[in-house]
Length: 231
Image (cartoon, rainbow, N blue to C red):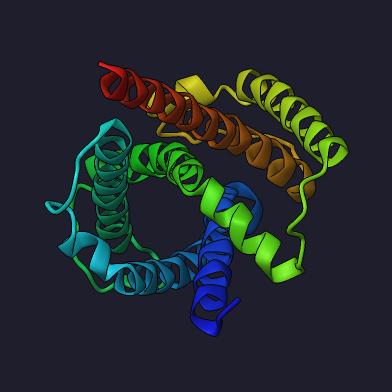
């Protein structure tokens, strides 16, 4: 694996992990939350800079279902992240307290809602690139041969993660957090480890769902192409 690709993977991995930590607001406290947010912003800027060629190529090439979905999700993720970061700076109490905001209730609502939606869209965004991520890890670890046992084991693990993710979604009222703003916050007594496990499993729902949905779409497109050749 070349150094540039490794740097991209590390940058994205750290950014994803810190976004999860930033969501644990009532565990970290405000100051740590804001510091992590600034680091995530810097990593997000680096992520987009490293992928700047993707933006230039949006209108080029063939736009099949897979590519249209990828463009839509990526642009939506960009908009959500920008809204979340702007609102974060405007309502900051510790790092940017000098910005005068008289009524910040709407900004707080925008920040909280975009944070939860950003969490879901981020998972879908990862799912869109999951095949590439796995291939990169295989090259890095030297695992090139296929193994039916490993494949079955990983699929069982994926099912278990998704099942626990569904449980965590209901237990953590994720649906309410996505659509209802609670000005008093969503309190819980979870430990940091449980919080991370729960939210990683919830991410797993959307990563797995997106990955296998793309595989299904790819198979359907291949069948359609084969039928066209046979005509």
